[in-house]
Image (cartoon, rainbow, N blue to C red; front, side, top):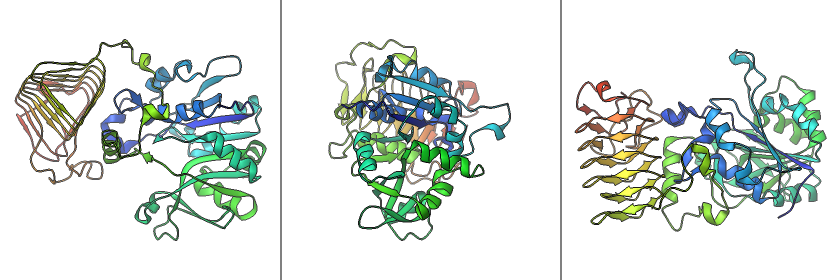
Length: 421
């Protein structure tokens, strides 16, 4: 591991992440739980730690409290000490939305004083909402070898997905010679990962030149390519933006497949188990006589008396006798009572599914959610934090139950496919 005392990391963690729907009603997207014991931001923080970088500013904005509690002092990722530190950087706001960060570059510009107070040769800019492992030290060495002003981490993606990304065309040396931001008709399959290395003085000069420009991909990178040394750092490996319900579910399910390429433990990804206000040393999971568990990941503190198939269970989940959980993600301290069934669903923390209730009824190709057709359309049903589903209730596919919904909030015992309550 190498120390980079001359490198500063800015981790962008302020996005609303609205496509994650009720999962981000009470928390920032990077603070959403993932893979049983982690949160999404743990991957970026651990990449920083494992690359020997030690000075980090985390730019927060939307519902930052759970994220701030999770980061704490930074001790979970070794960011404490005389030359180490993680600092939360909220927007310099009044009360107006217009004071909020208007884009990636605007967020960095609002924190120029932080950059200047931490003298550095380079600034690494990361997103806090991606699932991946990257050796940032290797990217820094690449940046220096190329004598680049700016280096952009890029990877090959299927052409039908390029419209979601910034896209670059490179020459034989890896220099980016053309750039298109979210092109409707792509001319390349090389996509930006939103990970940048800037020479510090170059970054400060860019930000000062055009104070109206708010976004790196949209405004700064095209200009830089025309006149300066901008290179593409090639990334090969597992990387996923979990910004949609479908991508979030798929990435969790990838953890259950041996050939998927994702392995947080082997990658050295660290959680902060003490940040949830619950004991970090929960007892081992307990499997009662007659229980069945297949192809699943079951965290500490779970008690399984029923059946769990192809599912991801966070700490403290209880699955009672004759209850079934299938193809689902169950977050911390949920209770699935006797005889209940949860099929293809995501349950946020501390949900109670009453005895004999059925979450995920009907054919999986049911109609999309009426209110959010672009969020839920593949059959996944979403239950908000601390909702209580009354015993015997039947909830269809692509349904949403709002956080905190109490039993008296269910007018009938059946929620049709695509409905929100």
